[in-house]
Length: 219
Image 1 (cartoon, rainbow, N blue to C red):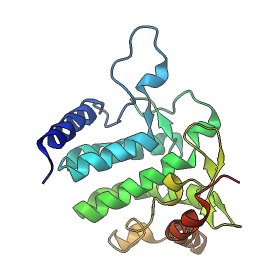
Image 2 (image 1 turned 90 degrees about the vertical axis):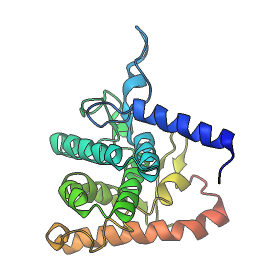
Image 3 (image 1 turned 45 degrees about the vertical axis):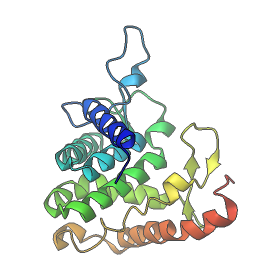
Image 4 (image 1 turned 180 degrees about the vertical axis):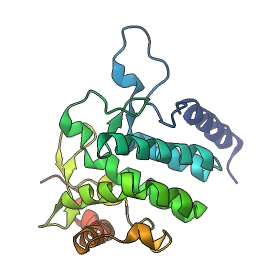
């Protein structure tokens, strides 16, 4: 049991997250921005939104998580891939290309999807979004794996350091999403795609021992 103050803090945090979810399903970075404020105050960043979806799902708000995954699948379908930053309607945000393709948001999105499937056994939803947002995202993450250390590499959340970062490497993105819980028809990919999934999955599991030695320092 949590102390009363902790329970109150948790309840307040959950209310805040629910208020930050737009009607489209996007989790936005902030509430209505004041006039003249920077537009990024109202963007949906996958590295934040995925954590918000997971937190609400764990707290019993599975519908909020489902809306988020449906929103991102629709956005990926329209854009041709899943951008790491979206506006409230699902259009790629006017951010630098490197930010739109950042692997940390992709990794956390896959992690949240895996946890949702494991928790809710929501195979019907995941089968519907798999092709559009999960499979291609996993391939992008696999492509970022450094052959020398076997871990995905990219910029940190502040774009200040390049390397293997724990938040990306430890996501274990394919643990559930790549397993036979999804309909077999949705999993019928080429051998190269399967190899990509295996590479990401193996890299995620190797991250713990590697990070304990190196502290996930940048290269």
